[in-house]
Image 1 (cartoon, rainbow, N blue to C red):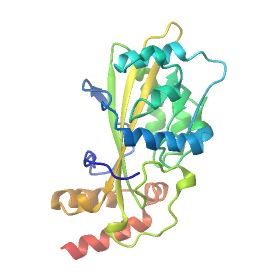
Image 2: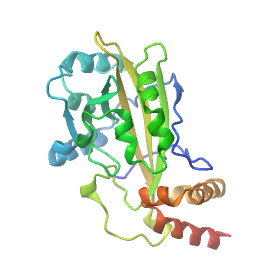
Image 3: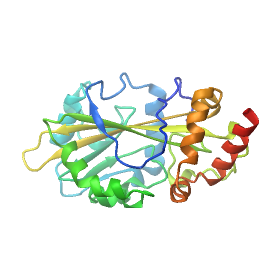
Image 4: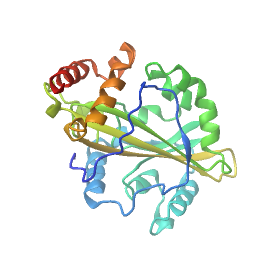
Amino acid sequence: MGDIKALPPFVVEVPYSTAPRMVRYQGPLIDLPARADYLYAKRVELATLGHSLSGHIAHHDLAPLIQHAAHALKLANPDQIQSIEDLALCLEEDVALMQDGVLSAICFCFPSSWVPTERIGMPLGKIHEHVADGQKLVAASPKIAHVMSDLEQGSFRRYVWTITNSPKLSQHPSHKNPNIPITIEDLYYRVETQTTLPLPCTAGRSSLFLVKVEVCPLSHLWSNLEQRQTLYDSIFSMSEAVLEYKNLQTIKTILMDSYRKAG
């Protein structure tokens, strides 16, 4: 599925940084009503790859927290939502549950080149260890996990973007596109809108992590002079480690050639 009706938010910054940039957020936490085609795409992914997309720590009773999250998100029939999968299939957003800084449950139908269930039981710092140039992110992870679950702090939001050769919402490793991109028309702009929601918990600290994935053809942004310049400058500010991690080496060359031709 790549037929997103509206353009994703343009969140490209110069210079590019992997440092955490979560800011307090008081707007709508989710996009309602969830689109039927979006939810259908999530069901298809769960039907084929559910064992690697969704799971939880076996001995935890998560139903009370999941139901509280459903109430907080103002979903219809919240008391009928018993599992992390139930919650995810009511939303366009993918969801994860953090408890005392550890990932205790997840349902990510549209992951970005990783296997969600492999991270269950990991603290946030461990989850972030693989991020290139992510030293600041790893160092800040314990504090991020604490703030995410602080009821007085409220919700936070951040954005993560990349350029890819696939129009699919899911970039699960099994969906890797083998085709080598050649021109701008072969590329897509992908954005994750990441939002936190602290949850009351009788023991420890808990929070919900919501991720909305959006994809559009890169050409829709590249035709805008200001956005083209920002994209170009951001890509060229990335370290070699980041380019390799995000699989952007070939894409960087395509952008450079197109930028020069555009003058």
